[in-house]
Length: 184
Image 1: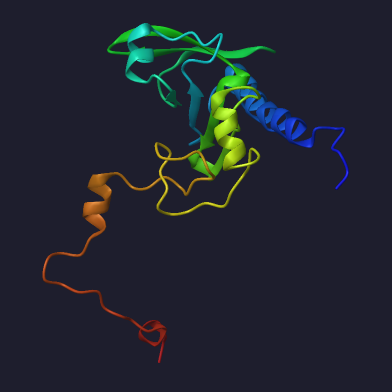
Image 2: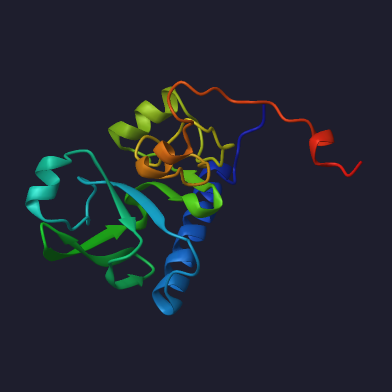
């Protein structure tokens, strides 16, 4: 096999991170349209990541944040994304360099990305032994954003909605044919 002089994996990683940056830039300028919201995962120990110490202690390897209803001062620069979020009713500024990202998901449209660890890190060695490249993968109904940053299914109904959708106890589902609705 020929030597890869272009380093395609690095080019693809940069392009996919560019998608996230474009989405964050648009959101910073215009806000979140419709039902869009984001799950953003990143390495808490990556150089340049700025998070409160109590969060770094609680999440020593990776943190997932949600940008949905309450966030302030969202910005995207060439080097990082920054946002203010509320933790314990205290507004905290987070700064996340783009290479620290491990995942991005927009469950409203079943879109997600998972990123490889930056070259030279222990996580990169782990990734080389398992998953090779950042990837967009098909949605799997059993996945939830907290568990994985693959392409995600549409948001599930909340627990109350799920309860309402269940048939009453002791009653079973019934099959109805289309003939029942046709005019005779």
